[in-house]
Image 1 (cartoon, protein in one colour):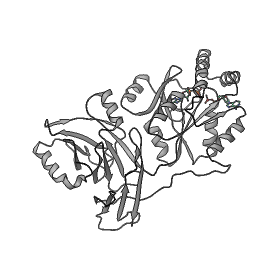
Image 2 (cartoon, rainbow, N blue to C red; image 1 turned 90 degrees about the vertical axis):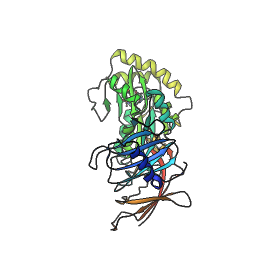
Image 3 (tube, rainbow, N blue to C red; image 1 turned 180 degrees about the vertical axis):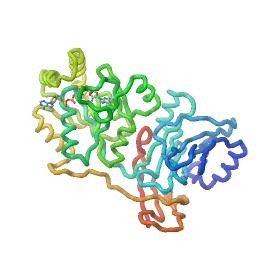
Image 4 (cartoon, rainbow, N blue to C red; image 1 turned 30 degrees about the horizontal axis):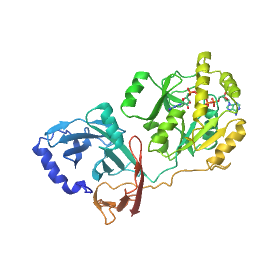
Length: 390
Ligand SMILES: Nc1nc2c(ncn2[C@@H]2O[C@H](COP(=O)(O)OP(=O)(O)O)[C@@H](O)[C@H]2O)c(=O)[nH]1
Ligand SMILES: Nc1ncnc2c1ncn2[C@@H]1O[C@H](COP(=O)(O)OP(=O)(O)O)[C@@H](O)[C@H]1O
């Protein structure tokens, strides 16, 4: 079927579906996209703008409806949406009356991530991934042994550059320390719950560290990137390795202690762990420091004197002493309430407004270049390029 606009043949797909007994049960507007004999029907199961878009699957060969496992955050429905087959493994959905940050969602039906989850979960699997204009600033991954000062350095950055950086709040099964607040320092959770969520693909990475599960959820990173800030991840070396192997392009920094003795002193003086926990963390520290030398990291910082280490961190992140804003160049618009879509000669997707009235901030035409999109579920599909005509 290749590069075809779904709307061009949706009338015949609607007929096919009706003839087969359409029990997709969607309220209001729905779209149908055919990929290799399967019809992907997308709509909302309840009325109201906030109800999420759901996916139902009809297999033409068997005449049966299949209930796919749907991964990723579902887009909220809008009065109207349109689906475009981008490649045979993903459909791009464009929503009416939505902001630049909310108007595009990819539904992956056969990507690498979806195939992996199919093997794990069995049955049909699809995954949503929000489209992101441009690349946004690269996330920063900070690793290093327990007690080396990662948290201290990150807190300083967040305090000095509050509009530039946002912290990715991890999930963990470890018990909260006295001053830790759920949702700010960590999302404290139960092992069983977290294991299920890992299977469901809610995590970008997860690892067993010092006997507890830790993980970065897709949502934690997206909550930061949605604000236009640069995401900081405080994760262990295993986590850094997973992120390195993923589609996320990040900067990897390893923080080393000046000596093992000093590390032990800091850990003890912090006074947050039992003796048994301290021993476990020190044993793991030796291994982590060795792994930090392996070339996984772009930069290694020695945290001897805190102020000079912080100055080095700022330098490598390209920050001067002033508060700077590293916000991604933001494109601001709202999609029209109704539109048609087509392809132009360069194979760009063209959204033409069908609104009768012109309104401020709502373009007459939006041209989308999807030729260099990257990433995808779990997480964002980055690299959309837009040009706009008012
Ligand atoms: N892989 C992974 N590691 C994490 C995550 N969150 C925290 N960690 C790491 O888990 C380890 C223990 O963290 P924590 O219990 O807060 O102790 P602390 O680092 O000594 O303050 C540290 O190496 C963290 O970098 C996560 O989401 N994923
Ligand atoms: N350069 C430093 N010199 C002395 N103490 C430090 C330094 N950096 C951090 N600390 C202290 O060491 C302890 C561990 O730091 P923390 O940021 O909690 O480490 P991590 O997050 O890597 O486990 C804290 O009590 C902190 O105040």
